[in-house]
Length: 189
Image (cartoon, rainbow, N blue to C red):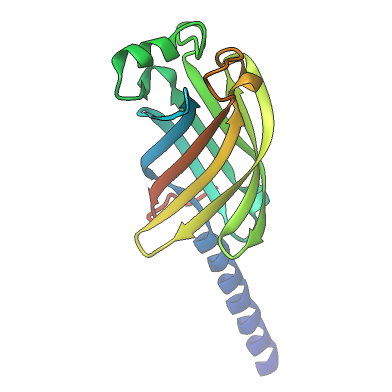
């Protein structure tokens, strides 16, 4: 009888430890700040800009990254390159067409672990009326107070009908994405 109680206690303890591990590693993170920076060459000069308004949702499971989710809505109206005339031009019909397509969407479709804090995600990116699934590497770093979800990658703007073919402007846009979130979290269901 005593042995059965010990085995039962060990089993219950093991289940609690396993559940706690899932709670600790599987979190919905409240995003504190978001940053999407871009660089494109135009007339051999790097033009830098940002999107200032981004809504994000991040749920990340380090033990099972394939169960993670990430969703970002980037508002075209918030494009900022330090030159108002250029910003207006980029929001126009020839580029992002803010009136007809006010949002850019990025959704994580699947993720896999590559190395220590390195992952690769298959992201669905929707710009204007074009959707593409693109494999993008990202890092997920966690400290005591915050996590940082970051990535650097390149997109071909012509794939998304952003501008036309140009002798002066590069077809490729370099992006740097970073989301900083609090480690205080809402338990998942």
